[in-house]
Image (tube, rainbow, N blue to C red; front, side):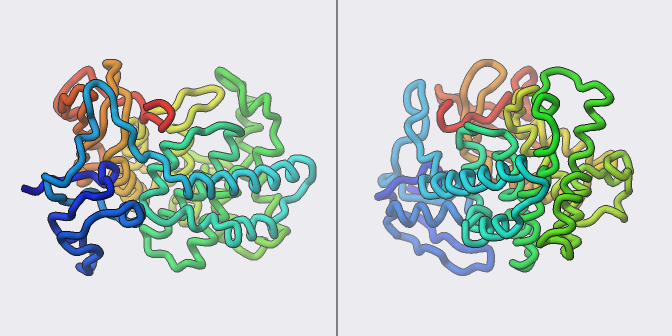
Length: 363
């Protein structure tokens, strides 16, 4: 008998009950293959959601008794690579705070030789961004996450590698102007005054000015991504209040990445939000003509696919695991399984919602 198994629940020794194929029909692994740790790790980098294994060879369910068993939520090589890049970016940002310019050569090295681009390849990036603890400076994590999400979008849109490279750089530096704004304002709890809000809104133009005379001076796409990531298609954004036809592709893409990561992260002035609440926010902004429809729908669709298997905290106080999301609807909520084994379709119940995704150290 065959059993459908999420990639996150695969264990060494399981036997494939059906072949695993790529989207073009090529067979990745044949039926009958005995899974090993390296094979499972390689599958996690592929756009594969679940596989079929022989029932007698499958491991226990991911829910045992009243608590989740230890799952492979963090990928050690990925986390190690992320931490190395985080440390290097910290040094670059530290130097920016002390000087008037950006070491764009160091940024270029970080993206290429520092292997940041390698962190942008595969659905694994989404699970790791959500599961890794975010210790340290918020702006550093946010800049790295927007860069990684932007790189993923470039892959999903089949951009040439050279253009993905530029999009990642633009994402990495999109908030560089905030390094010239007082941390007292950036981290202020409560509502900003009109004057403080105007100061914060200068960061996009400040970042543009910091970059337009350096290594990226002639690269309009990188510069426009930094300058325009807070512009909105209906003209309600800043710094210039321009409309859709005037906003660059990078500006429209980074707008979505910026909103998503900011909302799923704990900040000094706001608690992190469930991705599904973020999807609702993005959906409203798309329908109201603020955000780009094509980019927004693609992004939500891909993120939903990656979130299958994630653990969440429900508003009734229970922990649960996402086991299915209808990816055909941008506003669809998942079906989850609680620690006690109860299945809940959040589309069909009222009064229960996902309050947040749980990170590895919270499960």
